[in-house]
Image (cartoon, rainbow, N blue to C red; front, side, top):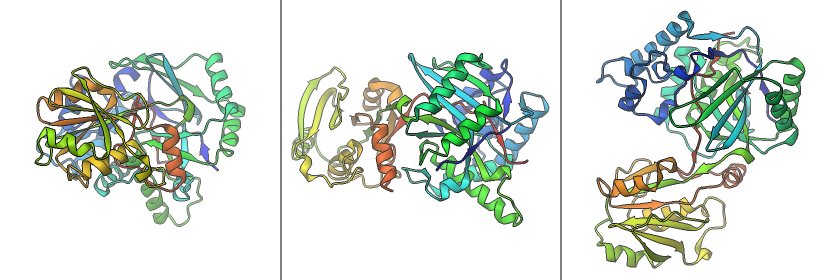
Length: 415
């Protein structure tokens, strides 16, 4: 069962929160992060992506980068851009996008829950990315980025959270440049916090929606600090990591689309003929074609959109991963026809989150790519079923929106 606890967050004041809050560090490359933080000395990117304050040619994994993160965090605290709450509590974080609101409980999750499989994952992590966040967390003595977790909704938990929202004004309420409304409530009533702590002990599993590398890194830092402190009690702050828990029924996964540089030596007519060995392929025309159901894909090639659907699902293996649309595309098209076996490392393929729209697929095919595939979104049920089965999804299977903003909550590892 899930173990969570309240904590005293380091966070910005209501006046500064809109300036501090930033998209997660891994949304940006260095140049994009520098542009996003330009002219804003309060941006949390100065802590989460500190290479923007160092020479352009510096290795992003250089020790100086992590030293800069710590220095910038110390400066934010000294200048009272960030302050630590005096007492522990839970926090409610609501994000509203296009009229749809998702409401999460900001808390600390137990390191052991990840080790025991109570916090379930659905993706592999890369060692270099893990090491980057391990060094960052270790240098800052803090979890600086919230980990996006979900769970199968329990009505009594949501009712308690909703009632708190009705009865209290938010401490933060602002809209970011992408049109997302962010609201934060401090929930510090001992009876309510105890109710929520006990209620989550009835939640059998939580699931990583976004933040696999941050989770693995936070856990490894906690375990390392335990090994360095053989007399630890288990109550130390480093035994827990920063997370935000959202009920599954409130979440929305967007499509995660693919673009490829070439047709592996085939002409367009040859490629479409080869596709028809496994797919029904119909030309739609120049109007963008967004898949309307599971099992359907859109393809943009040479100025035209096509609809694709698998001819015979009997060929699929009987497991939840093989039946994902992204797996079908990978098996029969990307690998089977285009020779792209390792989508993590093959430079012929790129990935475009659904938030950028189908126009972005067309634009890429008119500049540096040849063919694009528009996917129907993976469902939250598919994600949890795969995690429950102990399986892993292909890379780039899910794109969650809205993104949690970093900088609104920081969990110190120092008691």
